[in-house]
Each structure stands twice: as structure tokens, then as C-alpha cells.
Length: 135
Image (tube, rainbow, N blue to C red):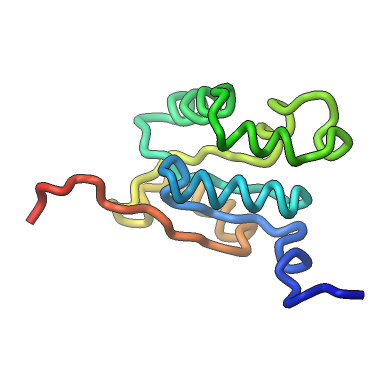
């Protein structure tokens, strides 16, 4: 029984909150988590958007793209893990949440903050400032 240092065992059934998930590092991180441990419970993705619908549309549009990130998930994950629908698998695992890392309490609405406070096991902060002209 070679479990290494137990990372896969740790990831199983965990709920994550990921900031910066729409950037390069965040996409690679999420791809690796889903590919290595598709049994994760959920990955809440903090998305800077004016409302839930816009955040959800942004995530859905990313999932539909034929880019390397999603192609890798599709290629490496056996069909039995997510059935016949890649989109259903993504919708089940990835949860868009409206927020902003520059705001108090991440700009989360009270109900989102309350539900994530009880459900999230791991927070991964990979957001970065992309305005390079600030002083």
C-alpha cells in the first residue's frame, strides 16, 4: 500500500475555495486537483463579477472552450468518473461565487459566506494584482 505522503487521500471529499481561479495558475491548479482527485466534493471559484448569473456564465464559457486546460481534464479522466457529460461533471464540481479579493470579506454576499464557512475545508489564495501601473 504505497500512498506516498497522502495528498490524494487528503483531497478526497474536500471542499475548496480558490481565488485567482480564472488566471493561469488557478486554471492549472484546478485542472490538477480534478484530474488527480475527481472525488473532491466541490471547488468554489471566487469570480469578480457584478452578479451570480455573470459569474456562472463566465465559468460556463471557460468550460466550453477547447483550450488546453479543459482538454487535459477530458483526456486524462476516464469516462466512468464523470459519465457521458463533461459539462455535468464541471457543473457538479465547480461552483462560481461572486466576490472580489480587494473587498472586505472577499466581497462575498452573507449567504455565500455563511454556507462556505461551514463547508469549505481548504482555501487556496492564488489571486494576483494584474494592474501593474499601481504604486
